[in-house]
Image (cartoon, rainbow over all chains, first blue to last red; front, side, top):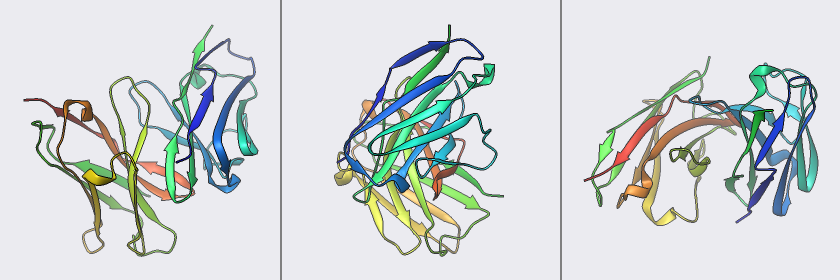
Length: 108
Length: 117
């Protein structure tokens, strides 16, 4: 089973700053099978990125994903107030799905 | 427009079996490449994938819970059913179903399940 480790656990930034979130897999993941989700407090998770770098429908272009193999990154170029939330990476490898433990992005 | 909605009991007792139904619209589970997944989230904790069933009846389970889970589909009713046996208080969580295309594209609102005697 592939384990995903996200870092940092909590990221404190101000609106307008750039956020870089990391997701590391315990073994290689096909880039097609890496996704990122945003979950605001009390809300349902929302798909941001699939295939490591493709934005889902309606996702602003300040969100971008990159990476391959075992190291993946979600970047938010300029933080808006509505971007402060918990972010999860998720992979599909060896026919099984796993989520990372999440990174909480909080206002500094 | 794709929508999904979870239904089932909101409370079960320890050792009981939980049966959850995901009723969906806007897509067909006979379309190649499509699946429906179940995911849960204990209060204040991370998302945990449980199971997924594909259009071709292929099913996948979390290794940690495989022995307790069964996922089935009824394409005529546009429903996917998840059963989880031997429920324990640690299984208290919000349970979501989601449409699998490129990632979990659309999620249901979730159903809160409490396991308590």
